[in-house]
Image (tube, rainbow, N blue to C red; front, top):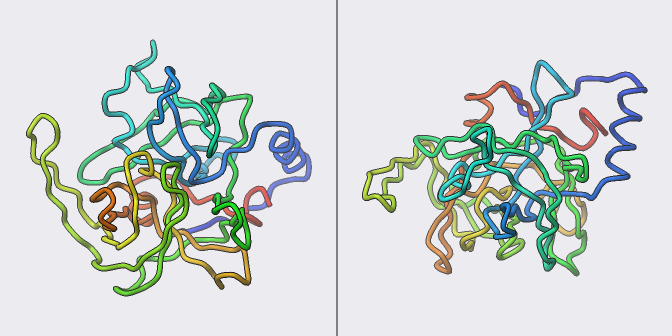
Length: 252
């Protein structure tokens, strides 16, 4: 199973990618996604690339970001960039073209907006040793007790420990239907509504390096009780034809 890609590209393509990222507004993992009315929907997760077409990229987020949203004329949900501590930008990222809620909760936003550049970088708290964290790769779900952190629009970066692996979580939705989420990681990381979809990661060496390794994306939990559920990235990779875009990988 691939967790990152070291595919090479020619210098013309590479120069084009860099120029586009320089000129556009930057979107980092953990920043917000708002809908057509400017309302916060979820958080940006991880930059992913089609394994067969390096020119087609997606932003990974939570599948339930689609709930309650009005689709566009093509039947998709339009999502826009919402930076931390900023008003709605109405800078279009793209449509949520593929999503699932059970048994695996994740969604894919096709990147077509011309005013933004989604980066393989995660936003960290203001005043932290490094305010931007570089995605260097991914890790399989760690052991119980391992330290992990999440970045999300509502509560920014918060950390805790893994308390359960390969959990099967059952709950009832707003229509009283039973929903079961499988292969989940349960953590003691604090999160609230709006953080869903944000990246969950571990530091390569906290406070001495800005490099991180992603574990998955935050799905939900018990607000303000320090319990958050995480979907492992390996589940997404197993169910799609995508690879994780990493700093120093496809575009670095």
